[in-house]
Image (cartoon, rainbow, N blue to C red; front, side):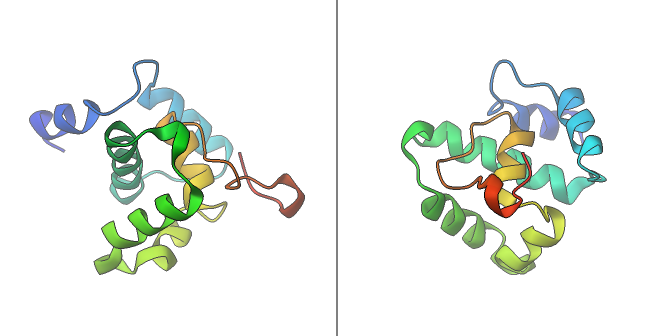
Length: 111
């Protein structure tokens, strides 16, 4: 990724977010981060920067991700990248609080 492209993507990152910490957490979850994973992380950060994150619902975020990645296969594609849940794992990697209902430890969601 070019320096200017990376800087553009990182402008939406939370102030206390670190790519290296996200990598470490991903490794602990058995995720091998590649450009496709990072594209989702940056998309989540951008979405959150444009919406009141404390008020978005799982459904809204699900629909936004499905639309953004529609050409690659939508939510089916996202689950291949994040088997523990694109919203639960993706938000955690992006340094965002997952919306209520995206993490259900009773059903084995990964956080």
